[in-house]
Length: 117
Image (cartoon, rainbow, N blue to C red; front, side, top):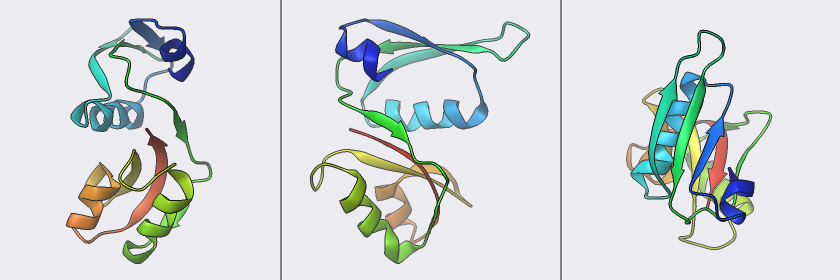
């Protein structure tokens, strides 16, 4: 996705599709980093077609999925993101998949999935 964004493409196809990837994309869409996306079922692993709007500088996954407590979220944000108040870290929590701001508001921790800015 980052490579297509750098090349100036308007659409990109991601495969394979999964529920986690779809939720991650919904967080990106909610924050205005991507446009609409469509999940295509090809009776195999599935594909996702994403409309890009030119806002992504970098997005990535953090593997392994480290446990992050409520108090440790700020340290991960400082380590992963390039500047304060710029970008988002995505966590999977007991309340679902959300960005670090929403997790802080709900006062919950979880496992770290990835980031985008």
